[in-house]
Image 1 (cartoon, one colour):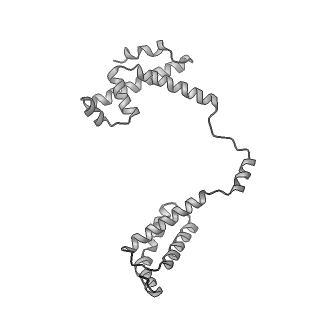
Image 2 (spheres, one colour):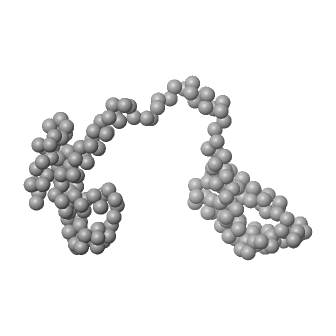
Image 3 (cartoon, one colour):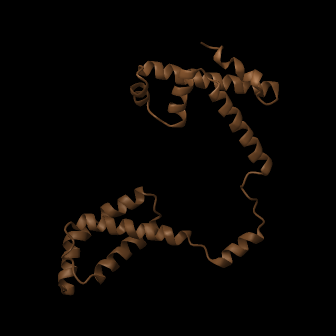
Length: 192
């Protein structure tokens, strides 16, 4: 059903216009620049004026906010599109790549291997709780229920595991050489 322009204008005047200040305040809180906010509100009114009917709009305020939000998102997406000639100009600037060097990748993998070996060498219950907490991200309550222990035990064992691993890593760093089997062997014996 098509409405007359006068009916649409009356709807906008009664149901949309009173909420413009709230929409502008919301856009300001969202971090929009004043010129962008003006553009978003103007575009919203243009789209409302282009409607053939307002019968589908149950709540003018909610519709106004949603439309302003959608237009704002469209502006952000458009801003992310970069013209091809801009890319060629950026290449001419010789910007340094943020990718880690191959040496850094190898060193990080080696460090990750050290941490994995240290976790494997933790005492059984400590390793189990540490893995569930720090790697799988389970809550203390979930771990306690799963293992049939108290949350206090979970907290203590997770902290103990972290302390043992950090101690072994700091000792290896102090010795300035990789963690060997001898270095992390005492993890089971220490700090019981």
